[in-house]
Length: 82
Image (cartoon, rainbow, N blue to C red; front, side, top):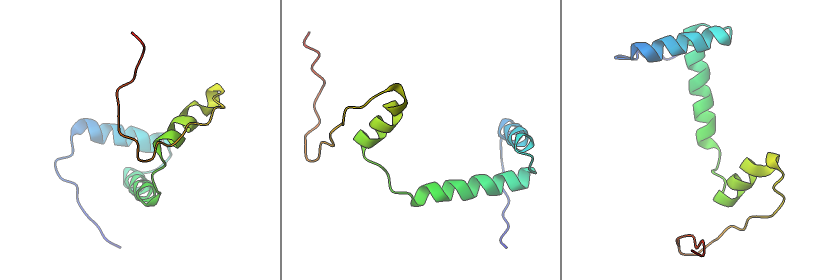
């Protein structure tokens, strides 16, 4: 197994990492491994399209309207009719 050292870690970051590890019942070292594993899992996941992300964010509030993906459309400012 590989090892590495993180130099110049801010005291605040170390304290927050320690509290997070305690909340999860892990050592700081295991917490760092957990964070790194999860970060790399996210990296391999394809990014969803903007409309899909908006729909997912508002799904819990009752949004049922399909939001179109605007492929090939030029960006433009919103028109609020003022």
